[in-house]
Length: 545
Image (cartoon, rainbow, N blue to C red; front, side, top):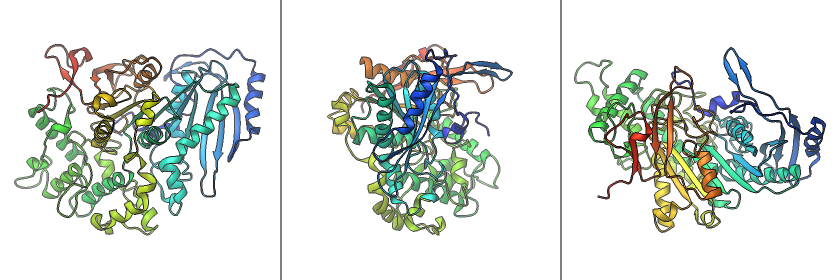
C-alpha cells in the first residue's frame, strides 16, 4: 500500500478506544459512583429501544513506548443500544458519555459505505470525547452488511430506508435521550460530523431533521446514491468489459503526470505542485498519450485511452450525452481508493455492486447491465428511498440558525466532487443567492485530496477524521470542526482554513500548507513567497465572464 493513511472505511476498526490529544487527568468522581450511574442505564426504558450494554471504561493516561506516544483518554460510560421501531428495522447506536467534564454538547457521527459497523465512527467519537462531548455513532441499521459489501441487504427494503435516511435521526434522538438521563439535564448544543456515507447522513439531517443539530460538518457527501454506484459500475465495466482495457499502476501514473502538466499550461495549476488547483476548469484528453506505434510503458493503447475517457466522462447515454459526473483530471493515482480500486472486483463483483442486487436479485451479473435500459428500473425502485440528499431544502435549518460546512477533495474517486458544487449552486438558487446561503452553509474544495483524505494535496484540516493525521492546531484556522463550533457558538464564519500536508517519511513534519477557501473563492498565489506556505496565498473570487 503506497499511502500510509488510507480512508477510514478500512482503518477505523483499529482505532478502538484510542483518543487523540494529550494526557487527560483521572476522573475525580469515585469509581463506584460512576460505575453505578453507568450500569443503571442498562435498565433504561425507551420506546422501541433495547439497551444491550452499559459499561464504564476507566480513564487511561498517555504512555510513551518504543513506537512513540500513545494518547490517553478520559473515563466514559459506553452504551450500546438497538432501536427496532418495526419488524425489519434494527438500528444500532453506540454512545460514549464522559463521566466528568461534560460540556453540555451532544456529538453525532456518521458511518461509511454500506455501514453495518460502529467502527467507522470511532475516530470522530474519540475527538468528541477529547473535547468533553457526549458522542455517538450508528451502524446505519445495515448489520450484518459491511462497509464494502452489501449483499446481506438483498430483500431488506427497511434496511435500505434506514441506511438512506432514518438511522442518523434514530441515533440522534436515542443518544440525546440517554444523555439526558445520564447527566440529569438537557443537551445544550449538538454537532454532527461524518464523511462519505456519513456525509450523506449529515446532509439528510440538515434537509429533513433541521432541529437535530446546531452545526453539521460533512465531507465528500454521497448525494445521488443510485448514480454514484452506477458510476463505479461504469468505470469497472470500461476497464474489464473488453480485453486490453485495464490501466496498470504505471499507466495511471503516466496519466496523472500528463494531466497535471496539461492543466498547469491551462492555468489550472501551480508549477511544482503534484496536484491540480482547479481541475474543474481544465480540459484534458488522454488521447494525447495514445501510442503512435507499438505499445510501450510510455504511451496508452487505444483500449486504455477508451477506459481513461470513460473515467473522466462518467456514465453517458447511448448517444454520448452525460448522465452523471465523472472524475476530474488529477484524480488518476493508483491509490487505496483511486482508479486502481475502481477497476478491481470485490467478491467477484464491481465495488459497491450489491446495490444492483437489491433491485435485480442475487444472480445479477454486471456484464449484462445496460445503463439506458436498467438505470430507470434502479431509480424507480431505490431513488425514493436512498436519494433524499438530492432533494429537500436547507431553509428550515438556516432559519433556526443552523450552520453547515461541507468539504470535498477535487481528486476524489468515490464520490464525484462536481456533485458538491452542484448541491451548493442549487441551494444558493433556492435561498436567493450565494451570499444568502453563505450565512448558513459553506463549501471548501480541497485540491489534490482524495476521498475524505489522502492524495498529493494538503489533506489535514479536520480533527474528527482520525486519518489523515490530525491538524497541527485545534484552532478554527486549521481545524474545520473547531471552525464549525466557532461559527455556531460565536458567529465567527470561516473565511479560510489552512490545510496541512504532513511528510510520509518523517512523522509530524509539515511538507506544505495551503489555504482552503469558501466556494466559489479559490486560493491564488500572491506571486512571491514559498508555495509551500499558506501565507503566500490569498482567497479570491473568480472573475465573472
